[in-house]
Length: 195
Image (cartoon, rainbow, N blue to C red; front, side, top):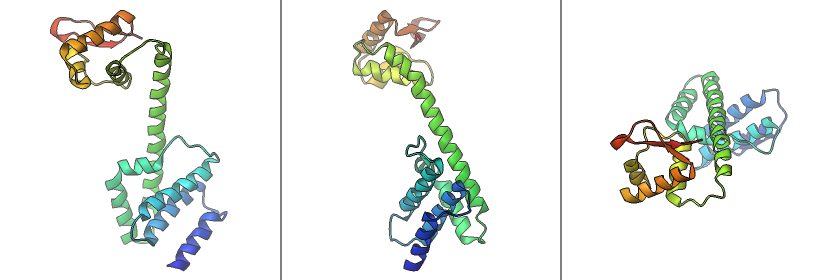
């Protein structure tokens, strides 16, 4: 095992002919297949893959996380690992899965970044306005794409406050111009960010 690990480390640290992204996928697979430790091999494989991706990016900063994406797709990860390790030595399916997961990780980071860039001007505009914790929480949920209608009763349920407190929070935000009522009224009155 020591010789295999040494060979692996030499390969990882050497300049090789494989494209950088392919090398990251192969390194991940190779380490997890070697499985030199009783525990932690998957974490080390993800770390080695991340190291090689950072080298491929040529930047000390990355805004995506392949490890986080693999965690989200754990079942598929273990399925493709098992089929690759128990099949022939063809790693095509593994590399296709790895590169697809990398693409989804980058897409997820882009989605997160888009959300941050959308929220930043809003919070800059209202930075000097004193808001309570409940108001900040619910405004963030609205900015993150709240599903359904935000009514005063839903506000109260999410913020864990009484209906009267929810209505006071909402009315204060309406008075400031942060929120507005959506068309409709009565019991179905809902609220949205006014910007």
